[in-house]
Structures are given as structure tokens and as C-alpha cells.
Picture 1 (cartoon, rainbow, N blue to C red):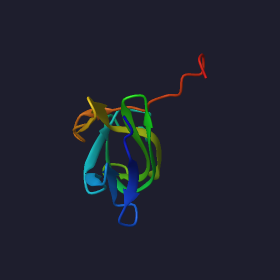
Picture 2 (tube, one colour):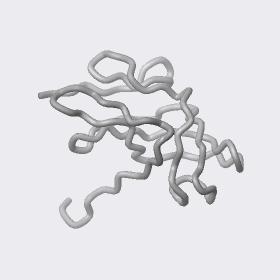
Picture 3 (cartoon, helix red, strand yellow):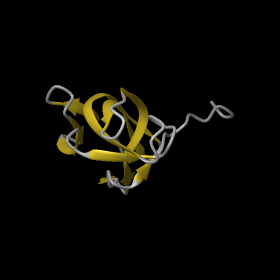
Length: 107
């Protein structure tokens, strides 16, 4: 089954199968070291740069800013949801997130 993912509205939304699913207006809780030294980091996303699928996980590259220390930087491969039986299930932005690292042992 093919799942269409893309950014919409000047990088403000992630669309899954032509339906707006994830917005930059949410504050994401990221584990320490992923974005800045805050533990955890509360990051307001500013824009989605790219979106893709890694197995069943929908990942996004984004720009964000930590609400505590002010760090503004990019976030690579932020898991924003998963595909289950052809349906998109978004992750809770308040849950602690981490990067999905590429499998370097099995490229």
C-alpha cells in the first residue's frame, strides 16, 4: 500500500494521504542531547523542511526553538507518527521523542 506524505502550507503542516495531520504549532518534548542540553527540551517547531517514511514510522526534518534555553536549530528525522494497517497514527508531541537513526549495519 502506498502512503503519500508531503509538507503543505509553506511548511506548516505534514499531509498524509492528502489530509493535514501534524502541525508546527505543537510543542514537542525531546530527550536530552537530541536538540540541546535541556532535559527534556520543549521545542516549538517553526517549519517542516522534509518528510518521509522509514518503515512504518513517518519522520520529519524540521526547524525548531527550545522554549527554555532559546536554542534554534534543525531536527533531523523526528518521528511524528506511524502507519498502522494503512492508517496514520500521530505521536503525542508531549511524549518524549528521539531521532530515528539510520541502520548503518544494514544499509
